[in-house]
Image (tube, rainbow, N blue to C red; front, side, top):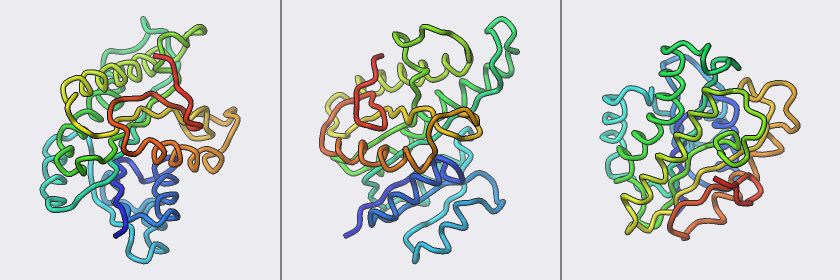
Length: 228
């Protein structure tokens, strides 16, 4: 029976490409989008022979998370992957408005953990839970500064995942924080070294290679450990 991946934040760029890669690998995919507008994921669904189901979710809205959990009740998810990341400009922290900082932290750190806590009952006992993190979330690798709010949000995400891993230390779930590298997206910018097509197969391969290995790891798209 085909395995099932639930990819939260799959409407475009990295999330959409990850959905496409798992379809290519023979999985069934459930992908979430915000709102009711047509997205790149809808275009992908037209070529997926019914193996791609699109669900609507704004992960910052807790009632929508609960509704999604209820709609998917009875389904077994082999991979739950949260793809979330916004940046609101490269400002020194003293110049970041409170509202902006709150938005970035809620989207990049708080909401992914709410997704995981809400949907974890759907994940197979030895399934995988992953989140798209970033090298910029690493404290030890931050030697240049910049992108203060974004870096803070990804460091917070990593810390919250460690809290989650400790809280459920007896679980057999594989827990992953994935650094996709510097990719040419709206967030990564045009100066990034590689394209989505270069990186996403490696991201999926890294995720799948860790299947069945309980505990939390912070890895890059080549399966290499990223220092905390």
